[in-house]
Image 1 (cartoon, rainbow, N blue to C red):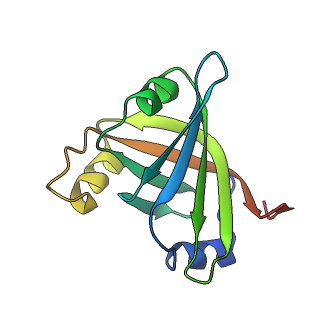
Image 2 (cartoon, one colour):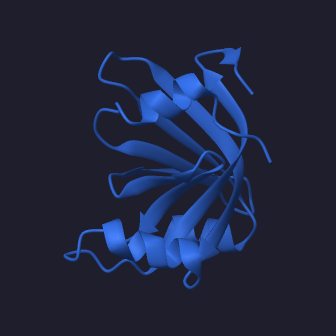
Length: 125
């Protein structure tokens, strides 16, 4: 599995606002959502809390890959692509339950494993 380059890992800590998470349905229809309940589990794994997923959950369970897009406070954009799993138990789910605000349901953790990383058109990994 690939790891986030140092510059992207540091940029993650300086992101501005919500991220965009994109999945694809079995018929090839893209679905993008904004998500603010997110975390870097480690340098290979980003997590999005499933608080209100519908199409996103269905796409993940059907085997979709995922794309996570974020922007920094300096307006630098990064795109992370990889396999995505839906976890409603285990260490990553337990970790998500700690940082996900209690006002949200936290049904599960969408776990994106880093495979490719871009800054604009430049492929970093």
